[in-house]
Each structure stands twice: as structure tokens, then as C-alpha cells.
Length: 575
Ligand SMILES: C[S@@+](CC[C@H](N)C(=O)[O-])C[C@H]1O[C@@H](n2cnc3c(N)ncnc32)[C@H](O)[C@@H]1O
Image 1 (cartoon, rainbow, N blue to C red):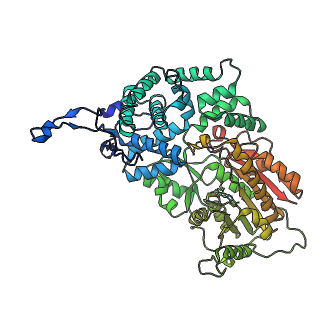
Image 2 (tube, rainbow, N blue to C red):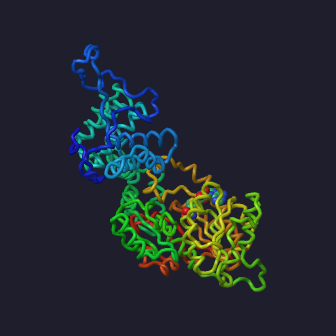
Image 3 (cartoon, rainbow, N blue to C red):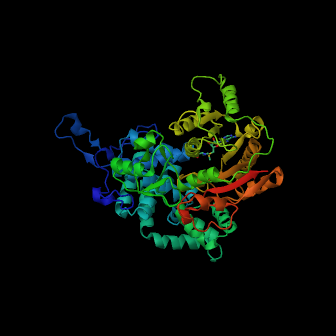
């Protein structure tokens, strides 16, 4: 392959080829085949040794050359399918281990993530190209190779002949010569029709009568039908027209922009923008909604000194807005005569220490009493489900500015460790990290907190842009299990909140079973809570008003309308 042959305009790998370190010699390193790579027979042109005795009588066979970024993308797909791995955890390690950088890294990333996101669309296309053979009859490895080839042809604008020949070479390397003919024939058939033609065709196959928009859009935009149906219902419940559905589904297939938060009091947005320009050559512009957001066209935020020091972080603007809304929500004064400990967090110290088997006066405990003057009735904040700590860091920074404290609770110890890293730049004495089940916290510390965040574990259907494989992994059964947990966490949060205090219930899913239904159940069951108008609070803090917020009381953000994850926010006040 000449470098120009495999150019991916879509990925920005303008020269198309994998240069230098981007080339592997075809060994099936790390493919898990355990057979030492492709067998020599039939795997490439023979090469005669020039007059070297016995070498002359035993022709050497050359292993097919394979493109390292393509091999890396293939391995990501196999690990996602075979070991339930997360692509965004597997790929960076592979790129680092193999020294795949720059444009080659961009190509591998777009190839792996794009193939995973658009797998449903490509399966619909491929099933039209296998002469009636169902895709389920193919080896899973071969199916992944075909999907990778289809994405290069239809999603990355790699010239068809390069996409086909490179995928055939990859097939020989990772699966041996047997399936190479099939891969070649199927991908040639894919390449005979352009993307627009295929979308028309697979749409008609899914919806022959033109009466089933959900089935048609599911096939063309690559979403499982149950998700498309749920998103449609959520749009309608939010007062949005059903014809936005296509835009929403398309937005799920776009990689999100790089968004950062400049944590208040720790780094100024302007200084962070200058650092981004200096370190990565990128221009970062202020976010549309959050006063602390910066948006860059690309780059790796984890390399920035301010991010490494946790003064800033990568954080979607929707996540920033919901944390800011909790901090801005109107509290009612504590009940006359209500008696409660002054800091609230002192009890958290004791609870954390009990769990960890430590003394609360241990040397590594923050000195909470050093926090600044605390406003009466607004001094103890709680993040019930804090891991990995993006919102806890923003809330912690705000709490420090306002002389309050934050207890950041997380059930998974390793995620609690991530929270500690996220909040590490917030001056000592403000944030306490606790490892524990949030469902118990309300009973352990009833009525102790003024502001409580429940960023509930959810299906993540609002963040499909970020998690390329998750739409294929989630099932409707998850809703039942998560729904019970979400209800218990919300009930515990209300119990932990003082009368007049506020709970923010947040999900990065717009699914009604995880959003309104959970909140409406809580209002019915718990009795001593009222809904606040979350839309009014978001309007009061946003730099510009996000369009279509509606009359409240709930806030639902949308990728296609706001460029954020589809975050849901309800604000409840304890009565
Ligand atoms: C949506 S994530 C929170 C994201 C976080 N607020 C942030 O902004 O980085 C939900 C978190 O809840 C945690 N979790 C799940 N069950 C929990 C429970 N019973 N108690 C406390 N945390 C729990 C999960 O481990 C996960 O870290």
C-alpha cells in the first residue's frame, strides 16, 4: 500500500499511511491467537535468498505487512467483545505500548470508536453483502474485520481499494488465509454503493412500509431499537418535537468536543486558555453555558499542567451546569430550634474512620475545622455518589470559596481513590472522601447536610458519544436493577438533608425510567419534599440561556440541542 492509498480525511491522517512506528511486521502480537501469527503458506510473495546455500533451496515466505493502527483498532474490538473491556480504557494503553502517536493514533482512535458506534449500521449493510449468509454464521473475528473495513469505506473515506486490501492483509495476519477471500468479496460489495445509497437501502429494509420511524432510524443511525424508542419518549416528555429524534441520534455518533473546567479559585479560565495555547497550540474558547468551561478543538487535556495538578479537569458542560445548579439552588432557613452538629462533616470523619478502621484524628485526615467562616445553614455539602470525582472537585472548589465543607462519598474504594485525586487541589480542610454505601448514609447522618448531590449510577444513555460500545452492552433489564438503586440513593439523600436543604438528583441518562419516574416516585413516597424549578436555577447561572429549557421543574439537556451530554436534573427541597 502506498501511504496515499489509505488516507483518512476523516481522521486527519492526511498522508493516509502509517509511518515509521506505525508499521508492524505482521506478527499477531497480542492478538490472543497464541499460534505465533499467520501461517506462512499462501501468505505473501516468495522471496529467494541471494545465493545463500541451503536458503536457496528453501524459499522464505514473507509475512503480510499489516498497518499498526488498524491492528490496534482490531484488538480493541476483540477485547470489547471478548472481555467486556471498555474501548476508552483499552485503546490508550495499546497506543502507548506500541508507540503509535500523532496521526496514526488519531486514525486508530477514529477507526476503533467509529466502528463500535456504527456497528449496527454496518451490520445492516454487511448483511446485504453476504449472499444471504446471516452475520451470526460468521466467526466473530471475521465480523469485526468486516466492520472495520466497512467503517473505512463508508465512515472514514479511505479509498475503497486501500480499505479492502489493508483489511484483507489484516485478516491474513490475525485470522489466517482462509477467510481472506470472503472479506475481500464482501468489502468489494460494500464499496459498490456510497453511504447515502446504503442509508436509503438499509432504511427500506428496516421499514419497508415507511411507517416505522424508530426501526428506520435505529438501522441508519446505529442504535438498538429499545434505545431509539426510549429517546423518542424522553424528547416528547421534555416538550420537544419527535422530528428532533434523527438529530439526537446523529449527535450520539459524533465524538464530543474537548471540554475543560477551570475549577473556581484554583485556576482562572483565561489562564487555562493561555496554558492550552502554550502547551498544545490549540485555541480554547469559553463554553456556551458554564462560566468555568473552555472548549478546545482537540488535544489531550491530561497533559496540561493544570489538569495534572487537578486545578482543572476534563468535564462536559452539562456536568458543570448541574453541579453549579446545586450550589445555586435556594435553601430555606433551618427549622427554628433545629439542633444539629455545627459542621456535619465531623460525623462523616467518624463514619469514614470506622469503615477504614482508622482513628478520625489520623494524620492524613483533613483538618475540617480550618475551613473559613461558614454561612449559617449552608455549610455542609454532600456528594453521595462521587466517583471518579469530576463534580466533587467543582463542588469542593465552590464550597471552599463559600466557607462550606464537602463530604464526597463513593462505594467503590478504587473510585474513591480517583475522587481523592480529583479534589487534591482544593485546599485542605474542605473536602472529606468517604468510602461507603450511599444507601446507608441517610440513616447514619440524618438531617446533617444543606446541599446534597445524587449523581446516580445509571445506564449512561445520555453519554453514548463518549462510550462507543455502551449502546450495545446496555439492556432494558439494567433499568430495573438501576431503578431500585436510584430510588434508595435518592431516599437516603433526602434523609441526610436538613429541613430546608436541597437535593440535586442527576443522571447522565434521559431515560424516563431513570429520571422523572424516580423523582415522581420519591415525591409520592417520601412526602416531606417539594420540587424546585431547576430550569429557573439553571437560567440564573448559565452564561447564556440554554434554548428549550421549558417551564421546568426538570432540566433535560441534549447533545443535539446543547452540545452537552443528555444530563437530567431535578432539585428537591426537604420540607
Ligand atoms: C454517575 S457516577 C458519578 C459521577 C461523579 N459524580 C462525577 O462527576 O465524577 C455514579 C457513581 O456512583 C457510585 N455508586 C454506585 N452505587 C453506589 C452506592 N450504593 N453508594 C455510593 N455510590 C455508589 C459508582 O461507583 C459511581 O462511581
